[in-house]
Amino acid sequence: MPISVYRVKKVQTPPQIQVGSFKIAFLTDGLWLNDGGCMFGVVPRELWKKDHPPDDQNRIRLNLTCPLIMRGREAVLVDTGIGNRLRDVERKIFGHQDGWLPDGLKALGMEAGDITHVVLSHLHFDHCGGVVRRRGEGGFVAAFPRARYFVQRGEIEVAGDSTNERMRAAYRHAAECLGPLAGLIEPLRGDTTIIPGVQALVTGGHTVDHQVVLVSDGPDAFVHLADIVPTRSHMKGPWNQAYDLDPLTTMARKAEYLARAAAHRWWISFAHDDQVFTAHVRKDGGKLGLSDMVGVPREYQSRQPIGGEMSGSSAAGKSL
Ligand SMILES: [Zn+2]
Image (cartoon, rainbow, N blue to C red; front, side, top):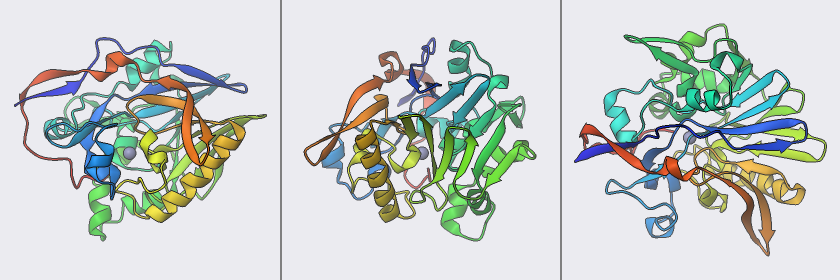
């Protein structure tokens, strides 16, 4: 079977919202594919397949949303997608070619050197892969050479711990990503103000030290929920990823954040929703819904063949 990946001729200018004095642009590192069963954990396929139609390998379409928070000269990038470091076999499994972040920045009139801060929600490959760029044969360099990089200290420790089999699999890419950043990473211990008005807040759940990013200025606020609410469908309490180390904590934290977002009219965004970059949360009776949705451009949603054969591997068991 010929394989195909999400590719576009030209990355669109990323949509932007205003949150107080901050501008937030919604960059994507591209669309990709991952096993639907892994993404929805205990939820039966019958329930998720309508909103997330699986392909013949049970993979669903996902995004790699990376909000860019800007004020004055400060430009804080939240997560970095997959980047261009995957080997060919992984590109086939995940339907992803080189990441689109550099093109998104260009469309904003910016370049990699303009990024002043990078906040990583956690160190899984689909969030930290873009911190490095592959240059020539096997060499990697920091993708954002002037940035300060922030991640929880516990994530770095777990990523370097080779004794736990499950953890080891989830972080096997980490050395390749973190090596070129030596000296640029500032490990965090708990909740931290990155710049005034932008906070990294630990949630746990997906990983022990998973963090979200909250932007607030006066009454206006925005929160990137990263992998505690990876798609719009995960706003439902019991809909959680099979990857979550502690789904009960994920449920508790997302309920808190979504309730605050609904009560105070915060913008929210998700790590992986293929349709919605950001939206307001509204409460209809007991149910949460979205309004004022800023969508992912339609042009991004068609796949193009790249030649070669599918390996037949499934993404199941990969840790995100
Ligand atoms: Zn993820």
